[in-house]
Length: 87
Image 1 (spheres, rainbow, N blue to C red):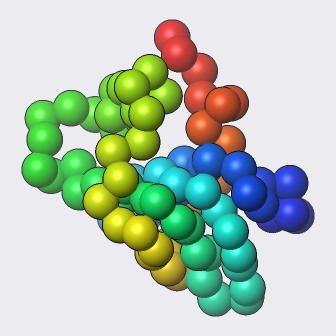
Image 2 (tube, rainbow, N blue to C red):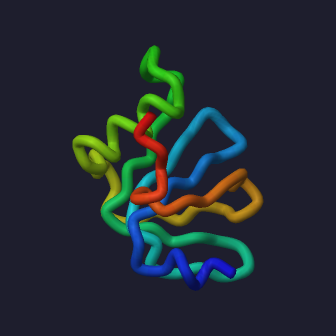
């Protein structure tokens, strides 16, 4: 089911107050691997998750990780960055 997201820039909404954006390059039963990723702690800013993601769509992913593995059990939703509504 995640095959359609491979090699695309994605947004991972997480259970925790984090959001992760990057290129999905691999996944297995336990992890999603993103490259050139932005792992963002929403507690570090006053903006909402939705505004942060919308800003990333407009200005590009603010890469702070070359590679990141995210536990699938922490993921609430996966979307292609291009599918994020701008409004």
